[in-house]
Image (tube, rainbow, N blue to C red):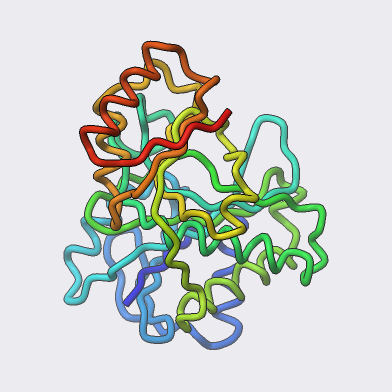
Length: 275
């Protein structure tokens, strides 16, 4: 059983929620705190009434009060960036340092690389069918809240400005992909991996689309310094231990290269240099 998290104050999240509601797929179960809880085709849907989706750090506490616990959480959200362009993204949450946008500082959520990358591939594949060719697709580095440590988290997002948030075909695309996930049609089982030193929007799209790997956590190049603790968290906070780590070799200095090499060797993760 999966859990799907929506926010009433997020235009994309609410738009996708309304599509499920329009189709009669939501059945009210109860209210807990700031959440309404619904059945969604035998799974659980959480609707936060008054808070933005990145600040729902109590969702894990709410889940622990339920009789049944979802095995995975999917958050449907808008995406924002400083220089906005049309984009769909997927990623896991967490903070490598300070918690500037929800979540806990120096703490990352549990990542399922297969789910994150399966959503990414399907976003890339279906956007053309929905007439959204102008939307790019990326897996993002691990960032923002909420922090959830016992249940794997995947965010799927539509952005990156008010103009794109209001594109209803995008809501329909996300609704369709979530429905595919519920029906068991969205599956990936390629080698689990992490990324170190890449850009915030990972630049290894062709590798991922070809099935070379499924990415979970990503430590971006702007995180400095990259520490042993971060690397250990990236490796251990995964539902499937990463077989390999893609390291953007030229993006990190010699001291960091030595540290990354040592820690990955100690953890039994193959280092793949990206030049």
